[in-house]
Image (cartoon, rainbow, N blue to C red; front, side, top):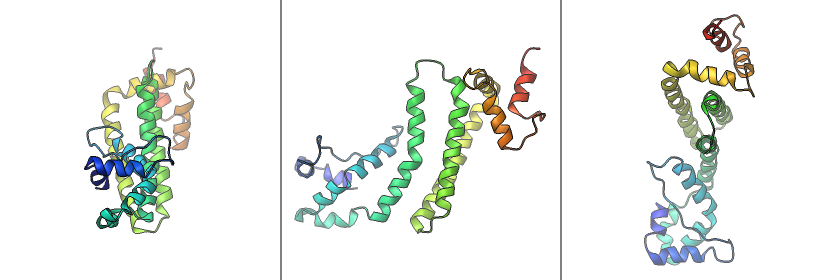
Length: 205
């Protein structure tokens, strides 16, 4: 809402830029989230967090006192920080994969597992938090792995063996990752569900 109010007219935009003079090298304006743009929510939150002190200063203008209740509280800024922490690995992997100029197939399983591990870590950290905002965030984050699992399930039925084989054949990993996963899940090395066993069974004799 404040992003809209600040950028509504040229005069307001200039006043917001004036708040930044002599404080930053390049002045910036608030941006808005765009549902159809990947990673826009994270960029919006980072931008708002970086400009929070200038937003507070802009609201101190007598002309805009009616908007002061819209300013984010310290507890809300803490939640914003949590959200940024949750979202950043997703942006990292998205940009990392999209900028590769070589094959990336062998990275797919690693990326998914890294994101699942990240979400597990966030949930463990939030589980001990007691404020209502943090409990609400815990509930939201708890749903994220379900969504991620849905995407993962859509990737694996037809291409699972291909992804596993590509990962195993990666010269930097070979079978190490699969063995580690099996050990972490306490799966017997002889178990036919183990990825390494599946690969060995599918490989030409």
